[in-house]
Length: 297
Image (cartoon, rainbow, N blue to C red; front, side):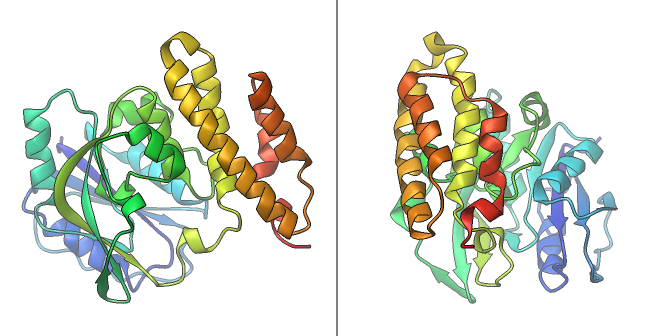
């Protein structure tokens, strides 16, 4: 059984996928299996595998979204540790080795990420301060923005499934949601070394496809809020911080909806739920996932 399973989901990334795969196969740490999940591609991908003993699993699923593809990859895995890599990103050669070494010296860690560099149109760019990774105040910062990068993480398979994996109803911000659920229970540690290159500017990224993306974060925040409410004695401090951020995001989304001449009744109801300290059932949150409610008529 390999020590790590590397999962790469992709759809129609024939021009980018080979670079990602190559960066995995060229790792100095070689005790892993590679799992490629084709999420309903309509074009062929020519992937060249180097001549080594790395087990490679390839499978296809109907177009279901990146969450479903990643979950399927974890289901097929045979290792206690999972490393994800987006098909448009690239690892530096000692990424897995350095993370594995760090875990051996810190056996209580269940999730570990590394530092990263951002590349846009072939040039490294400065990461805005609010997105720079840190081990400090991670709960509060992660509520505002996604502070953990899927492609940099090495995560225990056990905790991944204990918390239910990625939510497949989320078309984007699925990673934001997962990290918040994990941070309720444990810390996500940072290896302060640069082992990931994140590329942008190629036009088919999820962050560029969905309007009013904070609606997905609000959906996630309310679900996490339900867990915190269920045990206020343990989570009151985290709950207080979450509700402050949630109010801010609701206000921002309301302003956006006003500009789109959209009805704000739902958002006002959700605000009232927070004010009264009441629970919020899933049926009330579902409209947040409907794109038609957040685009101009």
